[in-house]
Amino acid sequence: MAFVSRGFLGRSGTHRGTGELPPGQYDVGDGFPVLSAGPTPRTATEDWDFTIDGEVAERARWTWQEFRSLPREDVVVDIHCVTKWSKFRTAWSGVSLDTLLAAVDTSAEYAVAVSDGGYTTNLPLEDLVDGRAWIVDRYEGEPLAAEHGGPARLLCPHLYFWKSAKWVRGLRLSSTDEPGFWETLGYHDYGDPWREQRYAGD
Amino acid sequence: MTTESRRLDGNAAAGRLADVFVFDATVVRTRCGTCGTSAPLGHYHVYADGPGMVVRCPTCEKMIMRLAQTPGHTWLDMGGAATLDIGE
Ligand SMILES: [Zn+2]
Image (cartoon, rainbow over all chains, first blue to last red; front, side):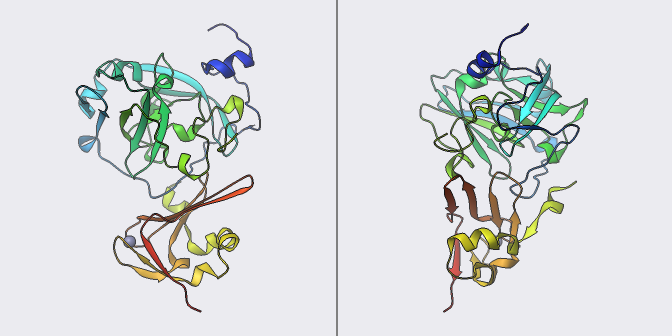
């Protein structure tokens, strides 16, 4: 993408590392805050798998080895946390959800990302396709640290960062929207930083 | 930095809980419904740097309570299976 206005970016959500600050956010600079709702899960890669299930004709599952052999993408994106920090030009590497979702046959419209440690977050399925979401296992050229969600996390940078579930182990697809961990506690169901959708009712 | 180093004790939840309860919640004997640990709520583990505040059992780390403040609202979820014994 060459250059598009912020208004267009806000609606389309295809913003990619152009260094603009959504309303109410500040630039955290070189820092990368760790926000925790519990102890850090530490799943060994030999015990890790990624599953897409729910309303699918047949569930799909990848072991770590299988996941690591899928076609990979490097992405540089800005990320925006609902606690108001933003971080520009973060560099990740992983597998596009277009690749993973191509393995299942579904008419579902919603997904719940399910993580080790019990965390969940809900997203419309259309926000996970067309090159807008990845399962990433590397950050800045290194294996993703457990504190930042390793072995692998969801990366869906056009929504507030709580949607980019750490320690992700799968997607559960459904025809109905099922609010996740923060979405059931007063946070916005969709969470578009460009429309400042922080809280329920925003 | 480890997340364990970010962990606080239950007294950190006192301010928020004071908005909700008329009693001092941190001294309330709280029994974890998962492992049976019984301790004052002030001894429970609190993770307070996320969007909201999560209170976990000091023994098994199961979540017993979640709190969030959004403009004009305090959200309290006590669905984490715990019993609070509130003395008079
Ligand atoms: Zn317990």
